[in-house]
Image (cartoon, rainbow, N blue to C red; front, side, top):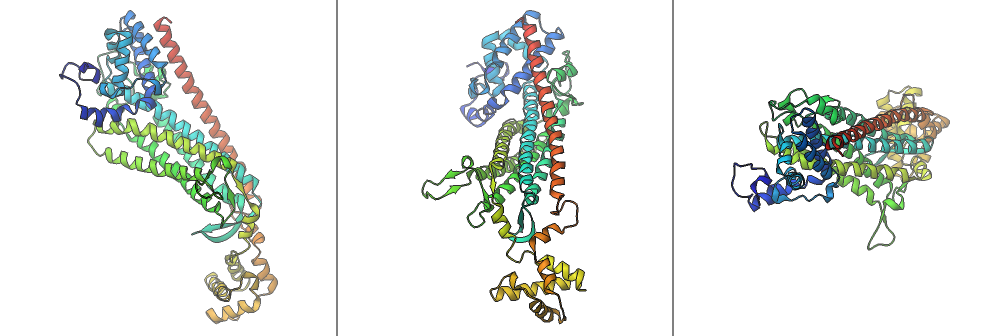
Length: 500
């Protein structure tokens, strides 16, 4: 096998060691299928730009673009990636030479090292992946908002430490999960803007004597502009860390949701039930319907968090090192694919989710869940400071629990006994005041703050979220259409030059 095919030029003799193929090129070649479209777009744009500048003989430009368009038509998972040739670039170069001939294929490297092909290809894949993840987040947020709207007035218990905390509305609880997802989407829009700056045309890392038109390359690639400094363009990695951090945060938000749903779907809670299509039967126990989709979401979150940590460790080298992109080229596209798929799954899970409002309401009517509201009333109407009122109610709850009774047994006499036992206070509270304070429906409706569970508040937030979702959907469809127009225009220009 010729050494030229794994990137040595004429400087080295022989082929790569088997150990180098196994440890290095095989790993790098794994990035080929996911980077294929980006690498092809990078090659086409560079060839078109050189042809337009008259830097390539017209007949060689035509032959080169004909062959590049043939490669462009091969799906990434069907391309003959061969680690023995080197990385993914070398496999493409080998196939290009077999179709265009060595002379025409050789013009593709004019003013461009192999790393630039990868930088541009990764940039495109990451940019489009950020948009895809954004759109998946928007779909998840929309599903959560719709679910919240359906249960806006249903009574439920909020939980902290898995213990009943305050009475609220089921829709209010569900809507709390939508806001982090909308923030995830907003972060991804910002990262997409950063990744939309072209790194093409650097000419190595200091420029080139070849007529590389960076603005024209940005147009051909559908980018919004260029990274100003060519060395920074070739070696910057922080945009990918930002993207992976956003992906890890997005996945972790969903892992949190998934863990809560799994608890609510347990027999002991019985409030949530996943659709059959998102569940899995037990191979041993016929009575079980395991919420398998939630395990997938949690596992993905763990994996991408590990990917982020691994990336950061690999980046602890000097600048302009291959270590960086040895990892980034492989990890970033794979992690994005996994988080996008997991987010789409989570959106489907929420769309198919059934919530039992009766069970949710029952949980809010037991477990002394309105104890804090009773303390509020004692502080507001019985002349106690809140800390003392809290202590008195806590003692009353302890007395009831110790005697095996529930909140229905909380009488004026028992509350007076608790006040005397805890702080030596003579407390007289009418039974109707206690009864109103202990009513979970009334408690959920008596919240005063914006964003609370009070009547109409959840509906207001649902409406506001839907406005945000509509704007996010518009952004997603607009950026997708712009990228598709650029891809189509580039390939049309390539075909024009190729004479096809």
